Length: 368
Image (cartoon, rainbow, N blue to C red; front, top):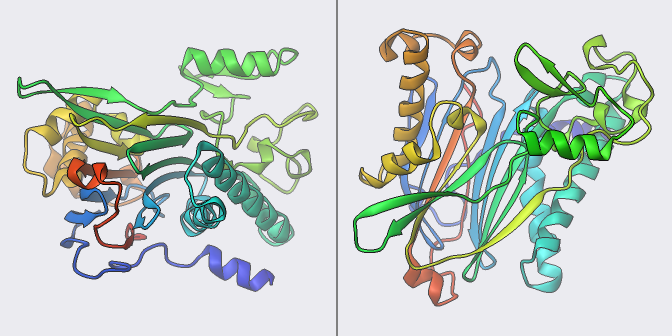
């Protein structure tokens, strides 16, 4: 059982096209950049791209499309790739199983899928504690979008983000509307929430080197994994001393309960940009939406990543061409792993309530 769980954790988190071959679009690579320029899903077209910066790619992502609608996941791992890979392997499966019970998508079914995935990963940490105790310090942000009927449900843990591009009347203009709530300690609302939950802990958030961190360690307050910040029995030797708290943990410091926001899709809602924090470090919501709106659909995700990399190079006063030559691991000093999925919305498909597009299951390339 332990071996099976271990092998499943490290299974490759990608497959070429999924259910209906031929609709996944063209796949390609440019150095550390992997992309699918354009493909079809149940409610329109999509574009997808990932660029690696870490020695081991810590971002994972997927698009699943079928009778239930469309499921998009962006998983921004930290401390290692294991939690993001586990979520990529398990969260959609649990969502599908929970949803099939009542044959309907609701905030509660999505929440149950998140919490069951968290429980599964915690059980895996317990199984591997003697051989791989560092698994207790691995976690991942999780951004999920589910399109069912005419409703988009956005569920989020951490600081990945989904932004809607909405047409402004007949002006030809486009508005950028953020649809996700973030859980990063650099946001005042998040710090305030943490202090309210932990009123007797003056060190619940600490400013270190100009960055606010939970307990001076981690930037996000919600995640899957990071069990060393949720269960006292894992906050001890032999995990690395930088993760161990000096005072007893009387209650979980982090949570895996997502913020879930429903959005009724409108005819002027044009596209959705799902992306890990690595993109939003370099592009504003408005810049990202304008780039997608002002260019052809094909290659939209790749174009956004390249714009972010060009900005990262500019900040370091170097040429983009020079940045492209920097290898993984060293590249992390310039930018993070970046995942982008753009969904273009076909309201004729959405309004009839039928999922007539291909059944697809696409996961991003694992790594080089």
